[in-house]
Image (cartoon, rainbow, N blue to C red; front, side):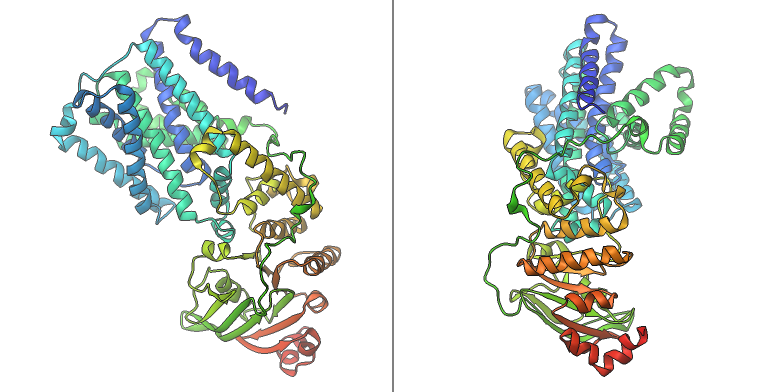
Length: 580
């Protein structure tokens, strides 16, 4: 796809929207157009939450109501200027979003949907019952109201700005963090991202968009009542986003056009509107699972491209921060953990130096991955402790452990499939340093410079791993061997002190295993991070490991050099001998 094509489409759409008042003075058309704009603003914000992070809200009519009533009360009761009232309404909706999101995002999926439904119902009841503030069922009258043409142009402008802000956000570290958490929360946290915090930010931003739309709704109509802010309204928002295309920047526009115009063409069936919405949802999920825009979308445009600095040599994946190297980087002392009364690990102690490859081997079920999960913060041990650089890390959440310098891969590669290969690496490079979200949405020169730097560093890392030709392809398009390699590069992009590799040779052919052998050996010899390797391919383990620890039934039965372990009677009986 030509890179100019999307911009031409947006330009034509903007010109058509802003030219409408010049071609017609019909108030009906202008009001319908304004309604499309309002729905676009709300769904653009909802796209951040549902489309990017994958969290479903059925309570956004509540934030829409907070914006509308906030603006109405401030203008009619306190005499505020509409612009100031709208700004405060936006902030108020965002603040409520922080509170609601902080509580609701402790759960996810259908449970989150239920919590947000409850929030919307509570807001609706407050609007009805708090008569002194909201006017009760009768609502609020005499809200400052511009001419319909001016209101339409204002709403169209805000809708356009909203889409531009969301587009910039998607192309920033924040946007990649949202999509990473949607794809694999486990992998995202292993790179230093707090999924809970990032989701709260997304929830708050989406609430702010709904609040602004609510304020504009109040000024458009000059009157508001609780009937406009029901559960049906929240369902309409989500349906518009689903039909348009969740996660696509243009999705809110397409969905808003269809969901606003369709009832106008079917005025004789107004009593069956909810049935029609339900049928539309079912049909779209079957025929258009990615929405209208998803069905029309062509080949991904490689906007996250390398700049002229892409070949710079200081972005080697083996590069780690300068630091004094203690004799023992990782100290695992007497760690134990049980599941359902069955001990998975018992009194495990391991010391890992700051350089070299330390392998952990053992039969299936020996507790190898369980130990890695403890080291990376996904499990908290029942007893014992873990220290990295003499700093306690056991009991910390995974993102906190990652920020202290522990990176890992997984038995099954956990890639962010909706991101390109280069974007996957960029998530690792940025880590928790996502920058100022407001500046990211504005796309300031400073933000664009940082993006160019991230792109250059990501492409340089990929080039060093012979993945440059795949940089602008979706990560899901990689074959199995390259998926493993990308996961290792992404982990190294965090510049860790300790790298945990969980069966990196699983599913690889002989040639790919030889390549992995060479890559890990080069990483060790070039001064890379300490490596803990969990692996079943004994030829690989014995060839590249400096030291080996053997687990059996959750206990350490041997430790030493590869040669010493190979000759250990207990190891021969428990593991090596069993494999021939």
